[in-house]
Image (tube, rainbow, N blue to C red; front, side, top):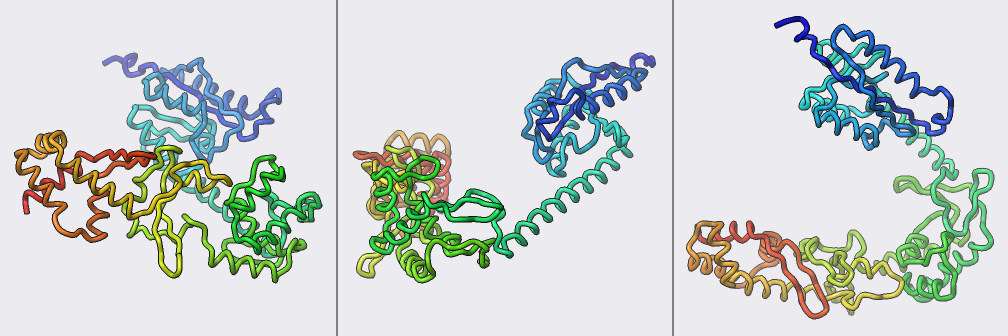
Length: 425
């Protein structure tokens, strides 16, 4: 083998990244500096067969905290396609600041036979010492990133504990003056009215409907929704306080409502949880959770319940319709027992149909007659709630509820498994 053969041409791509987009307008910015350094390094390796590709891979205004960058994606695609042999970077953090992301990138480079070089840190992954130095530097880069994040969180917590506003979406009814929340007269009256109206009717949906009907919209100009009304009624900002991770502190701003009104509203809110609220659904009693969908709105139907005269009634409600101030969905909600019974009946009929029996027979390698008997045995006798839950999730991919019909999509592999279980017992 000749030396010329050993010095096989290595196609080099230089990758650069700059976090601040405004730096792009400068005549000479760090992108240029990174590329100049990379070009000089590639020239220094000319004797080893290195040659620079004309194509540029420059990301302007993108953080190194993730790999969702257009130029980087294009570079990785070219590496995978075999058009790049060496990736040249100015410094390690230009490629990634995350150990997890960098580990994935390294795996991909190894798989594609691509090495990379950090010009200023003398890292070359084609050598064992270079790989060791890479791991050390990446550990420190991740440490630095986490320390910065901790400092930001500590500053945010300290700001909230002092009762100060630390940024974010301004609550309706407030404006910002000299970094402090102040009353906004054109909205504060409506905010007070929302609390007072809730004490009268205890219905965020009705309040949203009334505000929209009279033309009193949100600051963005969009209609109110019941959820936004509910969020307002739970926001401690309106009694002159601030919250942080479940803790409540005295704020430096003035509240828009008094403590007595707040306490009365919270009492009603705690005893009148909206249908479908988190924490109030019983998964063990909702075997169609994650399976049932509204055929009209195209969204999920989630389990919920209400109390009447001390008796609990279970339902599945259309999630999309429950978020609207005005109901539009003709399905809207259905009694849990009714839809679960219909699905069970539909399943039983489907599983005894010749088409399904033959399909399961072919997959499971069991004679059709024995498949029919095995599947039929699964429905024999009285099923417990747990058994229903197991069977529905084993056999049903999805259930679409329409006004006049339900459409059940089966999991063929689930039926195969059920048939084998029943047949082998």
